[in-house]
Image 1 (cartoon, chains in turn yellow, cyan):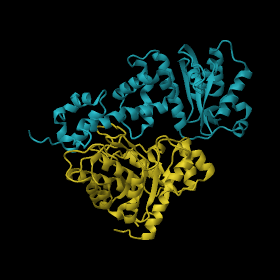
Image 2 (cartoon, chains in turn purple, orange):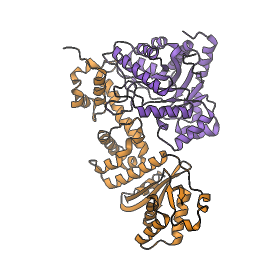
Image 3 (spheres, one colour):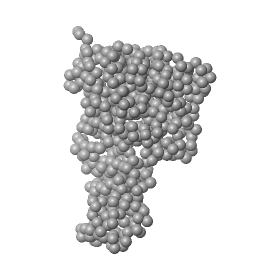
Image 4 (cartoon, chains in turn brown, orange):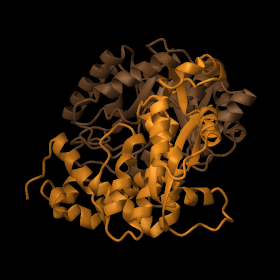
Length: 282
Length: 279
């Protein structure tokens, strides 16, 4: 169990509008849904209506892309206020976003941009995470984003930064195993070392996904099934953390719901193995 | 040469300046905004190479994805305009729009807010008036889709109004209701997109009037005649029913008949134009 006492919801998938119909008419065998926060903050139309229906049937967690917790711009208080309201409306198990920044000088690139991993940045992000948690009145869960460049000014590895951030800001982690794989390829470090260094009691959720290998680098496209190597990393991680809510992301060329569910349910065999060995808690 | 040291804020300003600059990555790195923070020849002091990519190529991944991502977002809101312009002209429009109206919100929902006004004055856009009308119509549809849900006027609401009270009654439109007077055949163009086999009408200057409304979370477009538009415009502005009808009759030649006006009201009520009647 993570230190926040956040329940393991099982295996979920991302809630996508293209699947609204099959979800509500077919009650698919899925344990929970992850909801893209920004898609529901400013709509009173069909998306929100559908979300309300889903929430009646399944547990959900909120996952955002616009917190920009690493930016040097002030935090967007209006955004956080709406996020908190949506979390209450949906009875979200937790609220997550990314360790990144998305814009500065009042602009938003809507990309998950990388940070330099140094002491000053760590202090900056810790302070912002605490502010957000105070405003949300719940722990913030941060995901490791896929990155395509590294800054020369970094003085620590991404996993050292993430581990210290989680402990010192007292926040949760959404460990995206595919992103670990992608970034390890792009930067030439060990994905296994990364996984092994993450404080197990901070991991509240896992992400799994497919990606696109361009030869010179890998892009986190969330397209297609996950590679076996990513599943192996997931098995390694769950052996350390025990059973943690797991979500399969599929955002490009989204197939019929049944195909996404089938891919997501592959996580069950690894979860069973983790439960059977009981070696977690490292 | 001393090592280049940038605080986090400076580093972020530089990276954003590069990512958001139009054109290629080399051009972006050399732009005045970016180069004032990091001289292009000092890039290696800021970004490390990987085993397969040099620093310029690594920054280029973010740079290239920016316009692509923002363009996809606009395309979601403006499928008709995207279709009409075609990929090359659309790409040029997106690039210019990003410079004129970069996103300043946490949500992409409002990113396309200024596209109609932008396309009207953007360089090298032919049939700019048609493009503006198409964009106005598509934005109205987007707004209707996301508007707050409000009740729809029911048969019971209508029959509860005493006949003598109708003249002074006011009809309250739903939050999703939008009313447009267009100079071009933009609505016909959107109609033609329902079917790929359909011939798409060329831009033509032709006044048209459209109401956009939502019922049961589905968005509808209602083509209006000019008198019907005038009446609906008056009602939406809060005029009493009698006053709005009189105004419509006074300004319309030939006068709409009583049956016509009754049919309009019935269609509007059924389509979810109104949420309440205030007596």
